Image 1 (cartoon, rainbow, N blue to C red):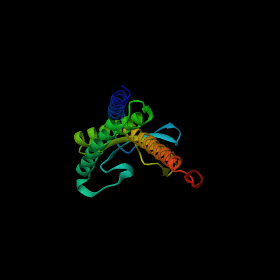
Image 2: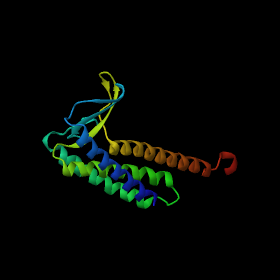
Image 3: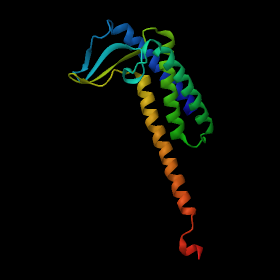
Image 4: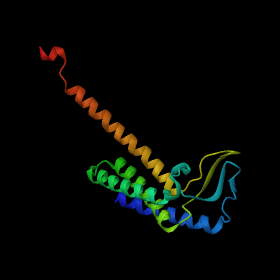
Length: 169
């Protein structure tokens, strides 16, 4: 329930906010202040990946293929995750939802993924992003934390299982 609930909620929120951004923020590239200069809404289309990374004219299709591969890998990781590990399930759900949200844009929009959240001060700005990007970023951080904690727990268990030199004698 947690996994699919997160996926559906994030995708709906992402699709709705992107549609609202396209309807109310045109023309693109014109910032609208929400909280002074710090938080603005600015409609842009990203043909590349995160932070505007581009691989040329085929970026749209390459990043679409990479996202699908990532979703397959995340699906396998989800199936291997115990039902009791809600933190990891939530993290995988967030990453999957964000990836799906941006895949939807890559399929439906030849101009690229719709981005509209613009944070920064003056000319020092973070790359414009959307709800799907937030889900991917937060989920990826949570997943990395979960995998790191699991690795540390395994290392502690392995070191506790090795008998000391006094115990061997």
